[in-house]
Length: 538
Image 1 (tube, rainbow, N blue to C red):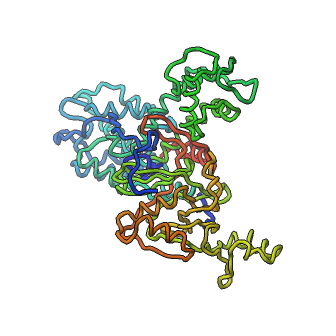
Image 2 (spheres, one colour):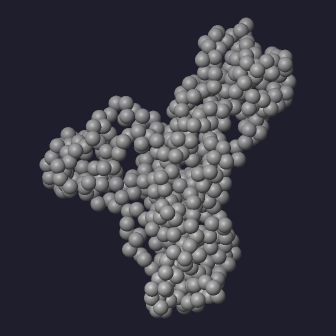
Image 3 (spheres, rainbow, N blue to C red):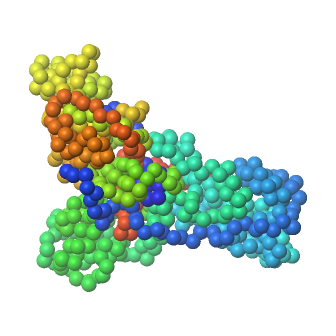
């Protein structure tokens, strides 16, 4: 996703499209080895220290206007700069009695290497900034121009790295999850309280994990042997021998899926394990087979993998750093739902999401109702395009599909063949999206599961019902089973609503520190990459 972890990556990324309407036991399972939230805290050194607290070295307030007239791109931060120095009574923030303080050089180094943040190397007035920083910065060379340049660059850096694209732009690409509220005023308040850039307090933790992989993949691009792997047959099996297998082994070693490269051109068990690692990271069945699809993924351009990392770092900028402790997260490209308590994974399950023509929306809500043995009220779009033409061709269509007229609409009656299955979960929203069971269980065995009209089908709907009702003494497994088989619709209102986030992340790092990548099912990554490039200025 789009939080403290991928979900919140992934949403708050964590965890986040256009949408078309509608579409065992309760014990906690052992957390999966490859779930999406890294357990260990990631500690990254940011820009150390705080602003100078000296009060004796000051500059004339009128110089702010002079500076902004000389560097007009920074006028977007005019109020912030004025308020910051007014509170400081125009005392220098980047100097003390000994000269320039260490955080100034740290900020400069960060800005010089802004491409490491997954952003274009576009810095306002970079030549002037470099020239100013090259001057000796002792107590005798205090420069108001450089002082204000550092403060202005600080705001520009914070806006790009912490905030990213503005909310209007993310809404334009149908990201309806709540954005992190990291406004200029909040950044200013942080500055006024003497705090400096410390990244872990500002960005969703997945950001820094992806940032590490950005460095690794840029290094692979520069130094790795990425010649396209060529095959002479469609499938390779254990004990086969081929130069192609040597090339595959080298590629898996380069990508980190093999810990060692024995230079063998034989399909041995070590190579098979590396293939399984690669398949796991990309969301395929871990069968260890080498086929056309596997080779295609191994040959996927490294530039596009880097782009995937970049755009998901951008999505992480939008995610709130903190999430509610108990929540559900659906990551669309992963085709998975994750259940979290106190930011720890309880369990996860496969889901089916909307087709490209019927995209599942990226947004959040609160599950309030469980509906056992539900009716399926045919959405208007499906009614017009599919149901009415079918009725016209076949007068017995309604009876054959357990459907009936309901006023001017059609609905499918409760039962095992109902398109919503035996239970659905409602979180009131304007997108008419909900979670539900399905009679079409075979689809959950597919690697890529974008088949619905927009709603989200659950592989283990009964397990979800048991989980949501686990603290309600009126319900147990037997009663839930009976309600699902009664064929009489029954609404149950949850005593406590449960937040659910639907997010869109095509790259994230799992608990084992492995980079996971998924196909861009709704073809959004390239569009977002283009937006990042087009908005590289202030």
